[in-house]
Amino acid sequence: QVQLAESGGGLVQAGGSLRLSCAASGTIFSINFMAWYRQAPGKQRELVATIASGGSTYYTDSVKGRFSISRDNAKNTVYLQMNSLKPEDTAVYYCNTKFIGTVYWGQGTQVTVSS
Image 1 (tube, helix red, strand yellow):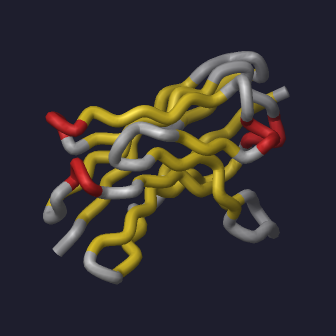
Image 2 (cartoon, helix red, strand yellow):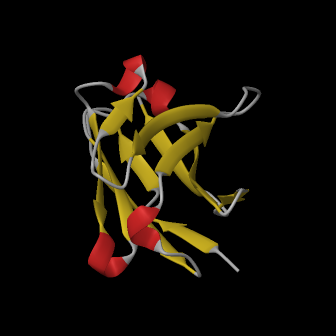
Image 3 (cartoon, one colour):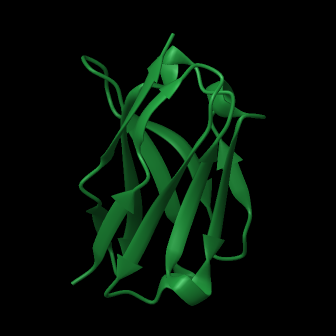
C-alpha cells in the first residue's frame, strides 16, 4: 500500500518562504512521477509542480520563478520549496503519485499566507 505523508505547512507572511516535504512508502520511489497539487477554498484542485524520475520538472505559470520541486530518492521524499509567497498561494497542498495504475494522494498540509 502506497502512503504519502506531507509536512511543512504553516502560516507565513507575504514574501516569506516555506518548504513542504512528502515522504513516500510502499512504492519504488525512484521510478515514481511525483507531483504537488493545491486546493484553495471554493476552488478546484490545481497542479502546482511535477518532477519525473529523471529529474525533469514542470511548474504552473503562477509559481514559476518562486517555487522549486526536488526529490531525494535515498529518503523517498519529494520537496516543494516555496519562496516569495503571496496570499493567493494560500491553499491545502497535496502530494500525488501514480503507481501500477493507481493514483495516490497524501492527506494534505495547510499553507496560509497573510498579507
